[in-house]
Length: 488
Ligand code: SAH
Image 1 (cartoon, rainbow, N blue to C red):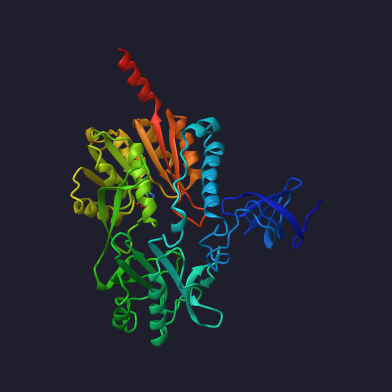
Image 2 (cartoon, helix red, strand yellow; image 1 turned 90 degrees about the vertical axis):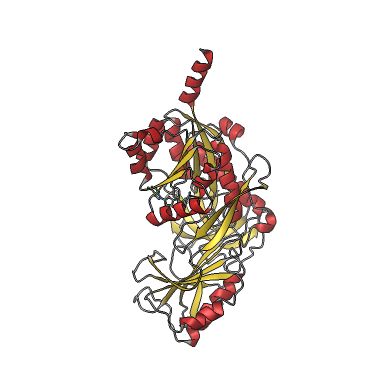
């Protein structure tokens, strides 16, 4: 049958795609239906028709999926932030576990039987904690169609602002902070920034909270160096419990990059503090007595879900399987969070990160925790690692027993992977925020002497399609060498 745009069809959703869209089939023809979930039977209106597939919008649900729940947020469909709020939490976890598993099979070439044996169950958040988990929010500020100043979130794939002062993923204080800034703007005639004309002042409100310490940083991103009557705004903001630091961030460029490089401290501390506890990854991730302290400035990268972060890092530490004698490289180390975890159990750790400021923060963080067996190098992983391997630098220092990587979504550069394999560390621990690129990189390493031994997914982003994964790869050649030695 030929399908046409605007035609309505009835379809049962059998699967969910990368972006949380429902996938259904009619006679082999595939439909991608936004806002429909696995198990729903829906009426869908075709919006874009291709030869073998079509995109469609949900018109009505005829039979709801047993996994369908009432989404907690009123704007979940318009806002681009959450994609799967209407899915029960158990089903969200199942979706993410399957996503990692399927990518490892399809892209990584890992056998199903292997995964049945080595893949551990996904670590979720506990049903009562699947909202209010994010420690960082960035609200764009703009005008609605009536010219009223609003803050909220971008609608999926656009820059239209959906007004929502209370995003359910962030802490409750955010609402009061956003409201205080908007009221100040109204009283003093301060205009929001307009992307089209590059005029107006306030672009974003960034709020960051240390969940362990309760300390809050507010950062108002403006298109200039001054905000009218900012001392009055400071007075109102510091009345919000927890607020310890208030900044202006200057971003004058016409760009999607939220923060500019200049920060002006209006009031309070330069940084807020947070603590990450080392958890017992062998049992139920209960926190141990050991923890690490971090200072956060407006520009530092920091994981957004503190509860899951400590579990995930503790898992990475367990997969590194350190005895105290190892040299560990931590590539893509950010502000040294994972490096400092590893330093507790290793002889020495070398962290590599491309952002210079993050390296400066990493060094400060090491000092703050009294950790001396770490060294941080600013540069690209794919440049720094080969330079050491090829003996251009300090070779005695460099041989890794364990390499940890935690790259951005695009995964590791091939040159980096190639050098990792050539350096033959006994173990590689890969922390990933994108299962597809993780699977691609695992395939590369498995073709060069490594075997996938452990996989565990972590749900750091409930209500969204994102998932983190930690895996352990073991050098098969090293094992072979080891066996020979034992036999001799
Ligand atoms: N491990 C850290 C940071 C992970 S995010 C943590 O958990 O906090 C990924 C980091 O990789 C970012 O800090 C980013 O700046 C850095 N990065 C991106 N490309 C890089 C490259 N080619 N070489 C080294 N670091 C890179």
